[in-house]
Image (cartoon, rainbow, N blue to C red; front, side):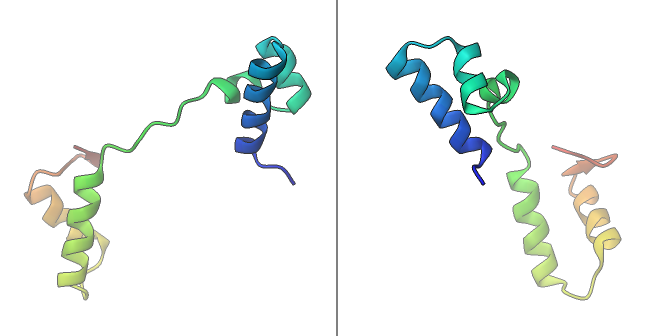
Length: 83
């Protein structure tokens, strides 16, 4: 089983080393052209995650709804959206 990341590397190698077109390289390596071009987006909620872990470790008896309320009070969450 070959991972999609490995297929992307193979396609990139075919393009660089053998001057194949993107379409041909993707076809030979078995990766879609959309997946080949995709650049992962880093999550913007690092501060929210850090604070949630901090609150959960401090208040280990509380569930998600209470922790969510605490984050909302700190204005880190508005209507379920992370900022």
